[in-house]
Length: 261
Image (cartoon, rainbow, N blue to C red; front, side):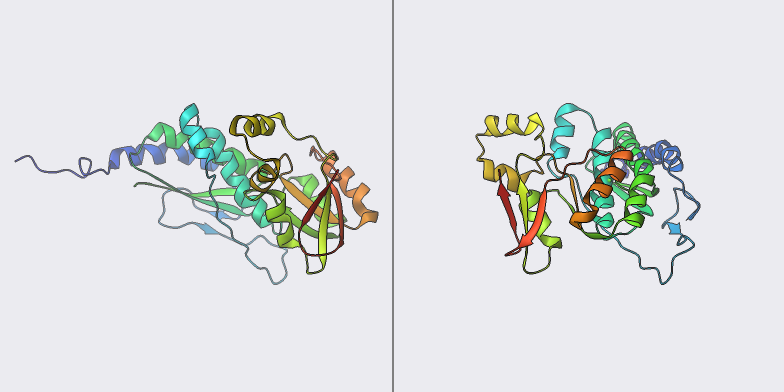
């Protein structure tokens, strides 16, 4: 009887090593001075940046959800990597923290080195956009708001709250950062909803309220500032290349989102 190999049992070591060889140079393009070593160790080592008093590390983890199904249907996996980083980076940023490094892990039923390379290419692109290092590079067979202009916003404007609008939309995410007794009153005419959402609504015959509680409808991130600081905040973000809309106001009331025309 022929001996059973690890590969035949479902784990291809050669494919794993090939994947690591492919992604190591991608990770190197995201290097920060605080990173110690590169891809290949059992764990990652990152120094805290200098200049922080009583530093606190803020961590987050997330996935891309149903976007992964779209990636498989389209046969394109690089863009989900960018989106994956954005999910984690934005969740960290809402707390005013600097995205320092991104720790990745890839698990899939059958290891495809080219597919892993495509995913990590997107992850590395997202890390470069966010200014954080990609460390880790583990594989197994089984996040742009922190640009220079946005750091300027955090330094120049008193930020009252920030919300990353992902699954659950504006009604599900914005109330999470509001104190008791505060309600977000948003004008539905204040921004242009991307056409893709109307296509989804029509194709799925989805009620409008359900669309708003499922998708971000074109608003990926909300920054709450004092009314007197709104113009300055919008100007700083626009100068950094962001598309900015003044979408509403915070009023007294139950902690929720209220839509008006």
